[in-house]
Amino acid sequence: MGIDEVQGKESRTKFNIIERFNSYTLLELTPKTGRRHQLRVHLYSIGHPIVGDLKYGEKTLQKSFSRLMLHAEKIDFFIEEKKKVKIKSPLPESFINILNKIRKD
Image 1 (cartoon, rainbow, N blue to C red):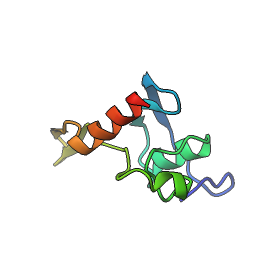
Image 2: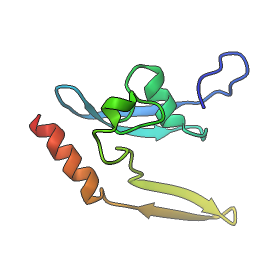
Image 3: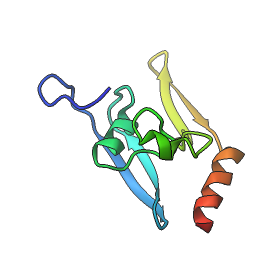
């Protein structure tokens, strides 16, 4: 996956800054299109890969994190054209632990 200005498909992501740290920023990302690796590629393309992203980030730095710091807090979708399904998932402990470590640094 990557950016292809000639043959690539349009993709859009909305973002909100939740919290800033010395070297990191916690974001809320909302994909407006559904491309594979969309969020990861968008952030990488502007020089800010997702923490722990071994595919798109600088591997030596990213290996120091035990997980990819990407979490789907909620997802809504339709089944059978009319029935809307909403799923919510709180941040897992592993995500919170890394976030707290980043806050301390």
